Picture (cartoon, rainbow, N blue to C red):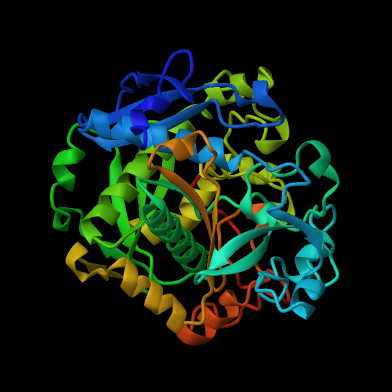
Length: 455
């Protein structure tokens, strides 16, 4: 018999010790509800750097925010639990050996992360993924059959302890890890996140045209946003798959913040509302970057966040001057909002959200189902593999945590580490006619290298 998920919340024995309602911030919508989960310190059990705090947000549903906070806490808890090096789920070998033995795997032909010009950039920290690169692989599943994936692409905070000596092929893989009510639900959630990030990366960096979504066409959204001083804009993120992908920006004229968020859902109204909520979350985060004693910089001074992940505070907000060539110093998603505090970034790029070339309604967005999405991905030649990361304690409940990995989709990364070696960029350029003068494999010319205003 499974235990209910709420058994994971306990002040003494729980993965989550307690929930704390987020104090309202001036400017938030009246219906905004935020809850943080205080997470137990898994490092007491070993090299397990799970996040100590997680956040859940909703419009008007405190219980829903608590469930979301618990889900995020469990996701990071399980995703940061790295198996020991002698675990039978791991194997040290090369892609060439796996291919010779006839094993399914995601190798360098599937995941050519970076373009040659990126590898030539001074100080670029990642090496080329080749058939002869020896590394640890972890066993997952693709269409019911075993499939091997680079372990560093599956787990969070992989390069700790003994793994610091492992080949570094890519940045932290943010997208595609999810908690679900069961394994199929986690699979669905993880795949939708991959679709959202793919649609955003392509639309943004290939400088694609914008289609704005009328806010009043989203049922209930205007009421959910009542009381806020933020101006919300929605745009479609185009995709060939049966799912609504949406980006939102929240503009705060009082502080000069521009904050973005995105979502992919089978229901267009849900996608629009979730994107707006994510933009508001980014706005709240960016408030902590405004002053040198803001909570982000205080956290850095306390040693909780690494100093190199953010740009030094600038009173004039000219963060572009500190970003380095090709934004090489924007090495974490948390630094991207700093670039959008720079008035020059807003002047050159904000129009993509606020002045779209065409306008549509939420009803014009794609709709679909999970089986339809899976079939669409198969038809496009995308391979999808999953790895169950659920720890034994969480597995006592019905909840499951899965890493979902896919070929043929572009994951998000900080501006310094865009995955421009993936063939998806060139395929979309040909199919949609975007950025025809750009050649992502050859160099950065013709691409939008600025980060979007998203975490």
